[in-house]
Length: 624
Image (cartoon, rainbow, N blue to C red; front, side, top):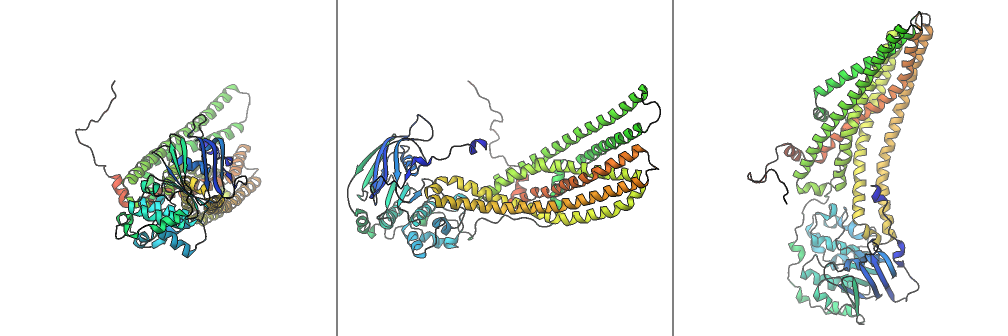
């Protein structure tokens, strides 16, 4: 993560926008340009010289891997400029070689944040040959596209991306192989209706391998790229693109099947991505029991109770022994008695330390065992899930299950349980010891305990729901970050407005997540204040009783009771902090069953069938 955040930003000086030093009729200028991908001394394109006038159709050709896409990247400012000058005058629209599709409706993908204009929108759909596809989708252009366009064919993704560029109404269109994903008939239609029709008069840089397009005569400039060298062949033909579009014979494509008729289109509901569900109410007993068994079951619980009881006994015993020691009469400097008292006190302290280590080791081992079982179940369920599951669940949601939830199951829940035992045992033993010393204290403790139970019940219900909201709110943030990272080149190419729009969307999703965190903070603060007030009530009750009974108690017992009373305040607050997350974080074990289908989970827990021959070797080794 640190390496990713430390990456260098794209240098804005790679491209000069709206350069006033070049003629008004020129859209793109590259002078003696040498470019690389940030690897000094290893240029990808060298000594590039290119002038593109406004309204030109520039065809870029060359073998695979020769640098055609790199040339497009230089015009976008994505490549590092080692030498030379690049100027681009006008608004840019970009079609990436690998079409970038967002997880939203078809219409939203095409409009891309621009105002909706029905006539322009219908015209764009027509020239990009998308109207037949929309008729086959149940929701038409309101059909939601899955993560990375998973419910679209390659040709459909290409045409949606091309339509997004055309709808932007830019001045310069950089199209990196938009015809490669469609068949010859659709290529001819798109070239004639879109590039030579709708975009006539616009500056178009078109990367293509199609010889018919290259030799059509519609291009005013042909650029050949080979082994990092760029050569330019220019032919001055005014308005020939429009003439070429009108002269195309309609008989060439009449009654021939288009790529959309052969594409596999996912005919499903209008909404593909399902909202992330969350349970309501108390954590189900099935979830608690499942996690309890995964941690080791009854034997781990009994072991923890025994360890905690021994630790608490050592703690209370050491305090009482210290009280007994300080209350002894006689010669304070009696070496044998002092040695005996120190030995007993040291043994009790050492036993307490050993129990702390034993408890931590037991909790860590149980949590690791539970997370290993859950991770194995999740992995098998994911590998056994049908393709529909990946359509309906974005990658951010899956990452949230494997990342955040596994962390809760492996670390937070086990140690919350350990802290719960500590806070619960310690509070009960402190109160019991104080009541043992001052019996009348029970009269004050009972109403305070009643208030604590009432406040706790009132607090736990909203806390559970807020915790579930936190789980649901984080997945859209992860999905949006992943999606924006994949299309960052396209986002930057469309200009600062598109970048600001993406940032605003990210802020909006983070605001939703932050609202849930703020609610969690407010509710926790509300409960903590009341716990501190109850703790103060306990301290007042204990101190009042000690003052009233000062003539009947030894100084040592008064010190023990007073010390315990002072610590009850903080223990109650920690008991809140530990007990609530122990319940709430169990919710992380529940979304596994919400995200993954029950049929998939059941198949994941069954024996995985062997898909290989029984004669297949079971061990492998390398030989020289």
